[in-house]
Image 1: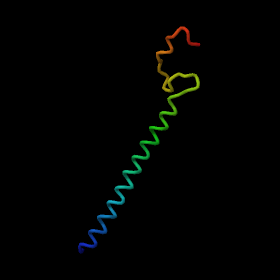
Image 2 (image 1 turned 120 degrees about the vertical axis):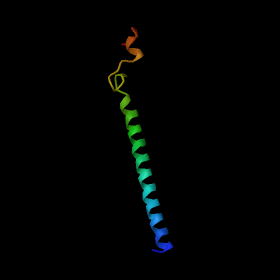
Image 3 (image 1 turned 180 degrees about the vertical axis):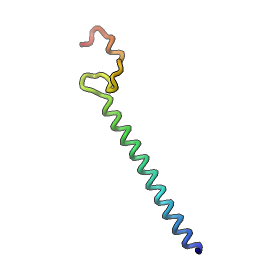
Image 4 (image 1 turned 30 degrees about the horizontal axis):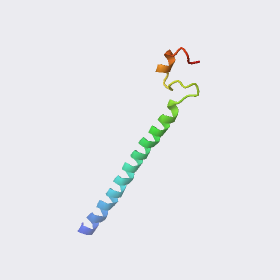
Length: 61
């Protein structure tokens, strides 16, 4: 194979690598944004069921 073929294969591989990295970053950002929305519940309690500091507040209803 000549230099032109190697150059074309290199840029095809580079393009695929950029697409793969962008996909992974997009999935991580989407999962992070989804997790932030799930943390808030209508009753103010953490979504994972843990207790929070407000649970011990006697003035809170």
